[in-house]
Length: 404
Image 1: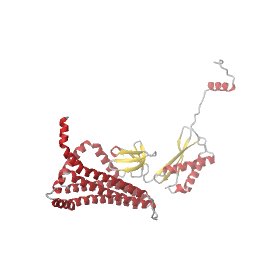
Image 2: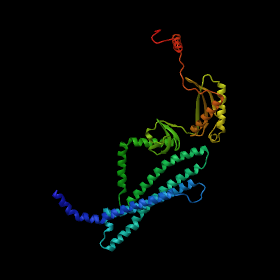
Image 3: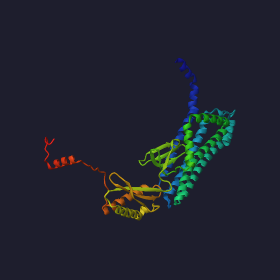
Image 4: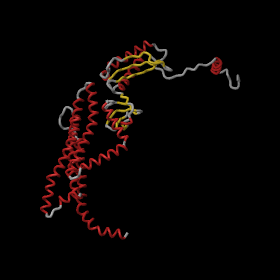
C-alpha cells in the first residue's frame, strides 16, 4: 500500500499538470458542446411547434417543409459543434498532433498550427458539412418525390406512391450510411490514419460477424426480397402470422406493424413466411346475417336490395364503392338460422367502415319487413313417457313420494 501511495505522489505533478491543462480544456469543451446542443434542441423544438403565421393554402404541408428545413439546420449546426469540439480534444490528447503543435519557438508553433488549420483542418470540416448536407438532400428529395405523387388521387397512382415510398425509405437509410462512411474515411485520411489498414480490418471483422450473425443476414435478405417483390407497402393492413396491423415502418431488417390497440409490433424480416395483405388494389366487405328458417326468402332478398340501395345513396360511403353489391340469398344452413350475405367491393382499407354501415341499413330494413334475426336456441324432443310426466307435473296431480 505504501508503494502505491509513493507512486501516486511521484506522478502527482504530471497528473495535476494534465488536470489543470489539457484535462480542464477537454472538460470545458465537452460541457460547452453539450450545453450548446441542448440550447439548439430547445430552440429548434420551439420553432417546430410554433404556429404558421404565413398565410398559405395548405398549412400542414407548409409546416412539414418548414420543420424539415429546421431539422436540417439543427443537424448541420450540431455537426459543426461536435466537430470543433472533437478537433479541440484531439489537439489536447492525440500524439499525432505533437509534431504540428510543438515548435522550437512560439512563432514556429503558431505558423505550424495555422498551416494545419488552413489545410487538413479546413478540409475535415468541409467533409463533415458536405456529408451532412448530402444526407439532408437525399432525405429532402426522396420525400419530395413521395409528396408530389401523393397529390394525385387516382388509385393506380396511390399504389405507385406507396411502393415508391417503401423503396425510398429503405434506400434513404442505405445511402445515408454510405455517405457518412465515406466522409469518415476521408477525415481519417486527413488525420494521417492509414485507411487501407482500417478497411482490411473491417473486412476481416465483417467475415467473422457474417459467420456469427446468420440471422441478421437472413433478415436483410428477406427485407430485400419483400421490397423487390412488392409483398406489402407502407400503410397497408397486413396479417403476418397471428399479428394483424398497419405497416408503419419497413427497413431491410425489420417490419413494424401498429395493431388496432395501438401496440407497436416489430417483426424481423427473416421470420416472415406468409404475408396476408388485407388492403391490396381493392377490398371486399362480406356482411353475413342470419334469418329464421320460417322467413320468406323473397322478402329477405328484397330487404337486402333495399339496404344495398341505402348504402349506395349514403354520400359518405358511396364514394368508396367500386361495384354493385352482390346478394347471396342463402349462403349457409346454420344451426339456428339461414345465413344470407351481402358482398360489397370497395376501395382498399374501407371494407370495415363499409361493412359496419351496411349492417346498420340491413337491421333497419329487416325490422321494417318484420324479418326475424334469430338468436341461438335449442329445440328439445321428448318421448311419450317424459311427455306424460311433464303434463302431470304441470297439472299438479303428481305428488312427491307417489307414482315412483
